[in-house]
Amino acid sequence: MKQIYTLADLQMWRRAKPPIRLGVLGHPVAHSLSPEMQNAALKETRIAMQSARFDIFPDELEPALGLLTQLEFVGVNLTVPHKVAAVTFVDEVDDLAREVGAINTIKCEAGRLCGFNTDGGGFARAIREEFAVDLRDLRILLLGAGGAARAIAWQCAKENCERLVVANRDAGKGTALVEQLRPFFAGPRVLGPVARLQSIALEEAALRFQIANTDLVVNATPLGLNRNDSLPIPVRLLEPHLMIYDTVYSSRPTAFVSGAIESGARAANGLSMLLHQGALAFEIWFDRPAPIEAMRKALSVAAAASAA
Ligand code: NAP
Image (cartoon, rainbow, N blue to C red):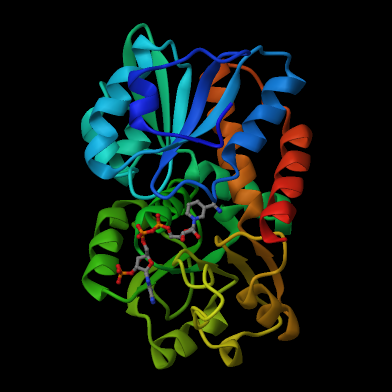
């Protein structure tokens, strides 16, 4: 089995043993930990197939997806930059993924491709696991309005969270997301003078004003992926009553998580969201519970190896 396959490999497919019937499509894709996690799940459940990485350029996505059913794939995960474009290349999109406008999971069924988005569900499970709280009990400050943030925002809205504030660099994108979600926040909840749903600028003064009325801060920007990145919000704004969830993942605490812990807040990085979105994808592909502990262990080993 190769470390990374390409469209050319799919076009001249050589059957591996056990057969490759799952994968992750992205560009770049070398960093993805999805195959290790899914291969552990396949082994644990004694399903005789394996998952691989596919480096697919944006203009190769449509032909690559077209080959999946011919090659008897069960499904794939999608990562950057394919989540939005893939919506137009599949035969069906489930309701939530259509609302979010992005898919991260495809199931091949009876010659058709069905798209799903498990990022929001994975996020909800991760928050429950990390902080023992449900989204509906939380006042949430969400940093970002891209693909991951949109999935998270829709999940928060559907679970009727107490309050959602979206702070994005491009304020227009943040406002557009908030306007889509407005019907979910029309119900009466008594919160005092602050709005239940709001878009604000990603600026210190605007953020400072929100902290006292926030329980959970979520970083859904890529800030933190690179060593030299600034923090998504200054640590001086963080307070001990906060929970901080950084969707950026790593085997070590991210700089944002370390800063939050130093401020006395509780904090976790995005490995748990990665785990649970992968577990939900497995459940979609195979209609059975995912072996979560085997997947967690494999993910932790793979993350530590990639950080070494
Ligand atoms: P995306 O669609 O490209 O969106 C990126 C978002 O980050 C946009 O809102 C963008 O703001 C903002 N942003 C980008 N650079 C910024 C900067 N320098 N300063 C401030 N804001 C900035 O990407 P995505 O798919 O949402 O992914 C975002 C991150 O989520 C990924 O890097 C990854 O770490 C994380 N993620 C984690 C998981 C998981 O399972 N843990 C799953 C999916 C994603 P503008 O709108 O102003 O451009």
